[in-house]
Amino acid sequence: MTVPRKKWRIGVLGCGRVSARYREVLGQELADRVEVVAAADLDPAKAAAFAEAVGGKPVGSIPELIAERPELVCVLTESGHHAEHALQLIEAGIHVQIEKPVALRPEDAERLRDAAAARGVVCAVVKQNRYNPAMRFVRQMVDEGRIGRLVTAGVRVHWCRHQDYYDDPWHGRWAMDGGVLAQQAIHHLDALQWLGGPIEAVCAAGKAVLNELEAEDTAVGVVRFKSGALGTIEATTSARDEDFEASLHLVGEQAMAKIGGRALNRVELWRPVEPRQGDESAAETYSQDVPTSYGLGHGPLLGELLDAIEKGVRPPIDVDEAMTSLRLVHALYASMETGGWVRLDDKPTSTRLGIGPGPAEDTTGE
Image (cartoon, rainbow, N blue to C red):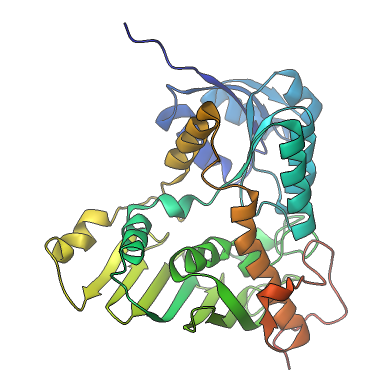
């Protein structure tokens, strides 16, 4: 006789833009494993709409959410509130999964990590692109040594956000969000390190080109990997008139690879020096169609997180793992602010991200 699998009591904190993806994950993809007990948002209409679609009680505050006794809460609030909100839940003895970024300041991320360890709960972070078949394939090729010595690697994010996106109370503001690097490209910066390896130093420039915002809508950077390889970063939300591309390429001594599509969801190039059986069909085998730039990795990631908690093992992406991309974002911003190369081992931090704007808003380094 098969024992029914435990159903997790799930809460959702924040019912804004990304919550549409969680409706699909919680209401469809993982419906056999989860029960949504509450959806919280300061806007009653948003909380009610989410609860109507997926189930649970619509509430307007964290105390009300906690009162519904969720075992795990998905934190989907504004970036600048992630640390504050997650900490309240952790202190109440609740597991949390935080949408990127884990926090805007590294010290806040460390505070979450330490609080979760002290309370005996899990603090996990969303990096859903790692679950794309295309990403998994290239990571396997890296692990097997088929890329060989890395020569160069780079990411390009050509997405579209119009002025109305930045006209809300938090997007594009230094204290609450940052710009394209902290909000959109952080996923791709994570992928750059996940596939290319640790980064030693960066030099970057950025500015608001088409949109009006405190932070940057366009940024470029040069990176030097610890392996000696060089790389590039190019990111903008001023592509028009839709999210066009999110790609990553690796050029190695033994192979070239490119992952593209809207969400790092397609193998666009796999060209090894010494082909093997199956290489010619990699693009077809490991590519997937995605409806939005969020991709389809949230469900597999959350499912693996639930497995990890049940088994008492490390979550797929914990705070320390998530901090690699957060520290890279801070290094890029620190380079913009100082106008030169910045070493990541020095743990540089931005003077603005998670704090507020400084006197100079042009970050081109001029």
